[in-house]
Image (cartoon, rainbow, N blue to C red):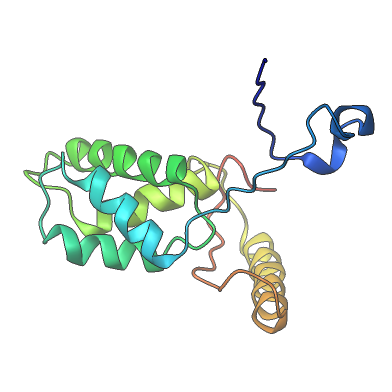
Length: 156
């Protein structure tokens, strides 16, 4: 017999002809890691880095700051943090490097766009609205950071 495996992040848009019995009829869901899973994934990716703090401490802190992140996102943050530390000519990667890396992975590069005080005020109110709405929505990811710094993958 022949076994065919396939993967998708959007099972909802697959043609029903693919998912009827005898075709791709068995589905296995692989969820994103929970807090403990993220801690363990960070620990794996941190082993190759020279760190300012202990691996367990950094892995625990970063796991709490990254709800909803997949393993590839975590690997990307670790690589990006090492680059941030190298750019500042540091001997070791610090927590602040991981925070910058997380911002970059989530939001993209910082934009050099200059905004007027009025534009900054409008953006601040808009982002505050997102934060307040997210705070009260039952199934929203936890609020980790609110910023008005424009980034390449944002709307500004």
